[in-house]
Each structure stands twice: as C-alpha cells, then as structure tokens.
Length: 510
Image (cartoon, rainbow, N blue to C red; front, side, top):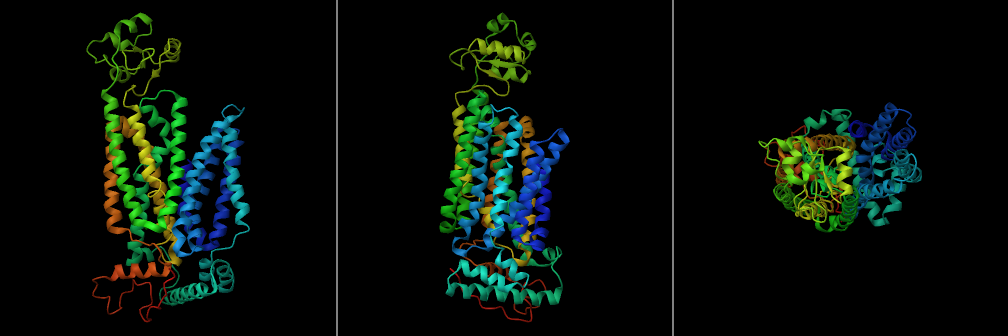
C-alpha cells in the first residue's frame, strides 16, 4: 500500500510543485508522512494501519522528485550533481538507520508501533527546517517574483556570478512569456507536441525505470531472504548481513557524491551498470552452485527420529539430497558440526524444527546449505558496491536537470511515477519469478535488463556535468532539430524558443 501511495504522490507532485512551489510541496510531503506515521503507530485495527501506509506513501512519492528538483534549482551548476546526490544519501543512510532503529526496538513492548512511529521524526525535523529555507529562485522567477528570487540568489552567488544567473533567468522568463502568448498555458499535451520534451522525457523516464528494473529495491527489500537463500538459515546472521548491505549502500552513495561532478553523469552510470552486470552474473552462478552442491539425506537417521517426511517412503521421488527434501514440502536438518554431511528430512513444522535445534542441527526450509553460500553474499555486496555510487544517485540527478524550468516539476513527476510503478512491478514479481524459474535464472534476467540499460544510457542519456539549465535546454533543441529540414527555416512549432525571436546568448557559468 505504501508503494501504491508513492505512485499517487509522484503523479500529483508535478501539479503541487508548480502550483505551490518546491518548498511548500516538500512541506506538504512531510505533513503526509508525519500523519501516516502517527496513524500507523496508533492504529487500533488493520484498516487504520493500511490508511497510514497510504499516507506515508503519498509523502514519499511527492518528496521523491520535489526534493531533488528543489536542491538542483538552488545549486550552482558545478556542484549541482553532488548536492542532488545528497538526497539519495539521505535515503540510503535512512535505510541503514532503520535497521538499527528496528534492532533497538526488538525487545521493547509494542515493538512495531515504536518502529512505525519513529519514522515520523525525520519528516518532522525536515518540516521544521524547511520553514526557515527559501523558495526555489527559479520557481519565483517563473511566478514573476523577480525581486524575491534575486534576494535569494544574492545569498548563493558572488556579484559577478549573480549577474550571469539573473541574465539567464531573465532570458528564460522572456522566452517563456513569448511562448505562452503563442500557445497559452503549459499542459501535458506539450509533452507530446514538443520533440525536445519527448526526447528529454524518454531519457528521464527510461533511466528512472531501468534503475528499478536493475533490481536494487529487490536487493534491499529482500536482502534477508536473499541471504537465507544463499544458505544462511539463522535469522540473526541474515539480519546482520542485511545491515552490512545497507551500510555499504550508504557508503557507496558518498563515493557517488564525490565522483558525480568530477567524472560526469554518463561515465559514472555506465561504470556502475557494467559492475552491476558482473555482480549479477556472479550471483547467478553462485545460486546455481548452491542448488547442486547440497548435502544428502541420511535415510536411517531420518526414519529413526520419528519425524520423517512422508514422501521419504516414496522411492520414486528423488529425496536422496536436501533439494529433493525441500521440493517435497519438508524441512532439512543438518548434521551436527558439519552442515555438509548427510542430514535428515523431516515434516516441516515447529516440532521438527525444535527437535533439530536440540540435536545441534540447523533447520532449512527454503534452500539448502552449501559451501558456496559466501560466494552469493560476495555477489550481493559487489552489487551494492557498484550500484550505489552510480545508478543510485545519477537517475535522480539527471531527472532534476534535463527538463525546461516550466516543465521540470511536471516531467519530474512523470519520471518519479514511472520509478514507483517499476518498483512495484519488481518487488511484487521477484519471489514469484524465483519460484517459477529459480534464483539463478532470475538474476540472469536482471543481468540482461542491466545490459539493455547500459545500451540505453549510451544512446539516449546526455551528459549534463557543469551545464546550466539553459544550456541543457539548448542541447535538447539541437538534438531535436538535428538533420531536420525545418531547422534552418525555424518553422517548427515544437521549438521551446519563439520562432520569431533569436535565441538569447548565454554565458557559461562553469
């Protein structure tokens, strides 16, 4: 329900951001999140809990694109990528802290209420801080509030740089005014009519969707399950390894902040995708090996214990190893001391599990123990190490940069909606896909998607390192009209610039 709420929130974020401003949109998102956290913590029945999750999702969806847009619009172009990436760091760092908070509340009465209620504290802190922060100067310019915008810009830039920024914003406002006189108010139909916008939206939406279809949230949501699938049956070990994965995700994002304005967006994303592809190949191979390198079943010890799996007497079924035991719906108890020695196949229930534990065995009901378990964890850690510096922050940064000011919130909202829809598809289908084709082939499918993403970035995603927003607009215009017979005549009605006016010369602010 939270993801469903995020989809709705992202879909309406464009309207809210353009209507009320980036600052107020962020405050509205915080309000939804706080209200949802309170509802979940105090829920007297399931329906209130579901409603709370929906409200939290609305807040997440709105903030997911409003926050990076706000940061981008108040940032100098030479450090814009790093500053926007801090938004991703807050997300990954929050995931890590959530593991610690949940761990701290495990022994507290009313555990889940405290866990869910604590989620409202960061939103409350952000709401209070946002009250003292200025509105985006670019949004103020679009609303013809130039005096307020210049007052804010004076706090960001030195006098020489300020003149350049004001000149660029004034030129953009003039062009927008001219275009509105020709076409009227902006609308979603403009996204279809304008070739520049179609190209930008295709790149932004596709990039955001590939971020999710690369499987990152599957890894984060199901990291304890993945670790257990790798052969680690202990819940404590699985949670500890998941905590390490979350910490690496946050640390990798810090590395991305350092690199994004030095290496550029494209190079960082392409390097990230290549590493993710290799990591997924390792994961696929590791899970294949864990499916064949399994202990056998000791028939004598199984029958002797009195909890034997009923299918053990059906000699037509391949129950002579752990895989056959689990495929029959039973549980596997490892031998004491060495889990790779022949074990026992019991009925899968709490009594059998307790008997296994009393005899110093480990209980497996999802996947079998294997000597290659750490190989799978290595692949998982490498995946996070490659994904977090590049494909974590770069898609959000790109989507905060590549759209014209008057369409930025609208297009960003569409891209964020695509992100959350993709997130829902991947998270809901992962375990079903594992059941249908197996874990090894599932990761191969993700690897194929990542290869497609590599080609997509190479072909369609532009480099925006160090470019002003106005320079990015000119770049899309050039791409849109490249090779067009109408380019020299200026007769295209798709152009973002008025066809009757010459483009304003813009100085580089790098």
